[in-house]
Structure formats: C-alpha cells, structure tokens
Length: 402
Image 1 (cartoon, rainbow, N blue to C red):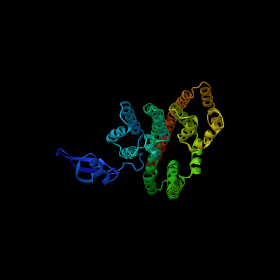
Image 2: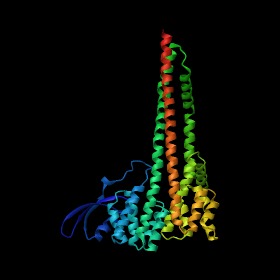
Image 3: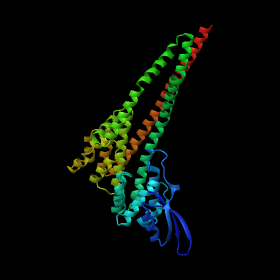
Image 4: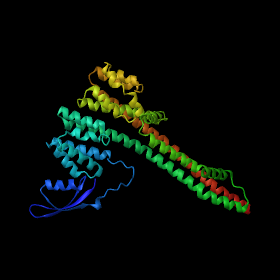
C-alpha cells in the first residue's frame, strides 16, 4: 500500500501538504473529499517507498502488536467508540504493514462489522486466540478486560521466544566464527605452505597434511553438497504446504536430544495458558479446547489433540481427554484434575503454564551453560590445529635449511 503526497486547500484558504497511506489514488482522493478539503494535486510519495532491509523479516513484530492492543485498552476504558479507537491507533502506527492491516480493519468496521469480524480475515497475521478473545470480550461486554488478559498472555509467549533466540545466538555466532577461521586456513594459508614446502623437497607434518587432505576433499565434494542442499530446499518449499510433511517434521523435532523436551513442554505451556485465557473470557470449554489446540506450534502435537472436543462431547473430563493425547506429563494432568474437582480450572491451567515456563527457562539456562564451554573448547582445538599446522612446517624448514 503506497503513500500519496497531497496538496490540499482548506475552507479558510490555507494550502496544506500531507502524506497519506491509501490502497489507491481514488480512495485517497475520497478520504480528503469526505473531510471537506479541496484537492489540488495527488502524487506518489517516493520518499516513503518501503523497502525491507531483510528479505525474510517479520512484517509485524510482537512488540508492535502488543503496543497497539495496550493503546486500544486505554482508549476503550476512556470511553471511545471502537471505530474512533481504530482511527486514533491508525494515525499513530509507524509499521507500514501493521498500518495497512488496521486500515482494512477500519474499513470493515465502517461497513458495520464488529471488531472480531473485522480482524477475522487476518487471522494468520495475528492469531486465532486473539480473534477468539475479541469475540469473547464482545459477547461478555467487557472487551477491555479480555484484551488486557490477551496482552498478558502475548507478553509471556513473546518473552519465551526471545529467551530461546537470545540463548542460541551466542553459541551460533561462536560456531560460525570457528567455521570461518577453519575455511580461511584450509583455503588460503595451507595451500601456500604446501607449494613453499615443495620447493624445499621437505615433507609436511602430519597435522598439516591431514588438513590439506580435508581441504582437497571438501573442494571435490563441495558441488555435490551444494546440489544436495538446493534439492533439500526445493523439496521443503514444495512440501511445506502438505500436512503429512509438516507433521513428520514436527515429530522429528520432538526426538532431537535436549531440544525435544523443550518443544514438548512449550506446547503444554502454550496450550494451558491459551485455554485458561479463553475460559476466563467466558468461552465454553468445548469451543475453547479447539481454539487452544491451534495455539500449539508443533503440528504433531496438534494432531494428537484433535480428538479432544469429541472426547469432551462424550462426557469425558478435560484431564481424561488430555491423557489420551499421550504426551501430557503426569504432573500436568494431576494439576488439571485438581482444578476440575476444585472448580478452579482456569487458575490451575495458569499454574501449569507457569510451572512449565519455568522448567523451559531452567532447561535453556542449563543448555547455554553447557553449550558455551563446548563451543569454546571446539574453537580452542581449531585455533590449536591452525597454529600447529602453520608453525610446525616453519620449524621443519629451519631444520632443513640448517
């Protein structure tokens, strides 16, 4: 959606210049005509052409989305009607992708739709849970409180994602640096030593020969490796829309050592927190279970829980239905069972989510504390190999010359 630079004349004779985001030139013209302004000229504002710095960057960040919802809560509590709330938020949003979506939502609301109905077509950009929360808030007549609960939920989910990303950043950077050092060594430095040694008719040390052999083998097999990687990427893009492929990939993730339990417990925590949020918003257990299932990021776990609504329809309790899924830990099932018997299911689900979030945090901290020394030792071995492969030939040359 482009920006248009408009020159306008007001009723009192003032000439204004304003940049306005609109789907088309006609809609831009209609907007200012509705405000009673005389349009002198309209043209594309080339200074505001949006070019993403990273091709695959996320268009709408969690931070931006949480911020507009906090502003929406404040405006609703101040007594603003929904359309006015969206108008105010649209005028302040800087993220162009988010602004485009909100303008579409604004148009739908003007057409007579409710807030949840206006957001529904953009479920993939936000979340099913968010749409359900809006719907529940509208039905209960307490939209501000429901959105506030969703914001608390979104903050916890966002913090968990950030913690995992930050935990993996340092080890990955160290590993990449190690690979770059090794590549420079075997590609540029050691081949020069090899030619230099040949002039002296001396034999290279064993460690240097080993690295050179590795370098030569890598050069031979590198085209095959690249071809294999390209084929894997092509297969991934072709299969990524197929449910069986996504489920199989998600199942493999759960079998990865140390990472599998984190993904599993993350799924349990997300399901529990989402279900608690929806139940607190006034949605029935039968409807809430299906929506909470969609909040779980692992497709294999989602597939295992698809029968939950049917089990509950047949009269089973939530804990009994979850036990049939086969992956919920016994402790979580016991806590949910206690919540059902004490008529405090929402509170107990929150406790389950908090417990497993804390376990995930501990696992991540342990992982970081273990992986950092391993990577540092690996880098130390690479540096030691580099030094030995470079200096040993020099010492040998000195002996040959003497």
